[in-house]
Image (cartoon, rainbow, N blue to C red; front, side, top):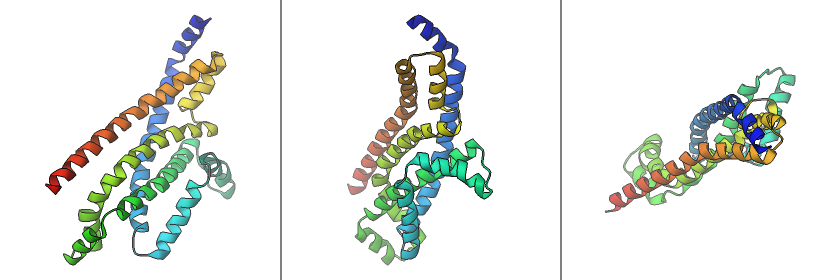
Length: 224
């Protein structure tokens, strides 16, 4: 029995590759866009404008406080009723990018606020503009705080991408549901799906550890 199931699993190899490719492409695009937008929102929220900071904070809290499944359903099923037609791939990119940018925004804000006030005041006394202070003084120091949770958020986003299977995209999770119809062994099939997600995420965990050590070493050299 198990050999027949393994043979069926081997026959599903092309479908699994298709699902893996979809998961990786979705994650890469969403991570890139989410990082750019998240950093921009974080810098703006940590700025002097209380109104802008409050608006961004309200949106971030709304997205962080609602299930991603509900968000992706609103984007894919409700927006077309308002005249905004989106295919499943575009809806998934929008949903994942929005989710990532909101979480990354809060990570960036925490990193910026962790920079000692004296450093900012010294940069201000040196005559640096706000952008120069942010680029040359604040962000380099904030990155030591931002990096570990940022990469952790990347891992979470890759796992959250499994939700897009609910709107019909053939990612790893949907491949698992399709394969389990051929191979009636859900434990085996989804164990392999989980292993595939782990293989995709684990290099990010290693990269985070390596970068954190390098940043720590660089900080120690500066103090010396």
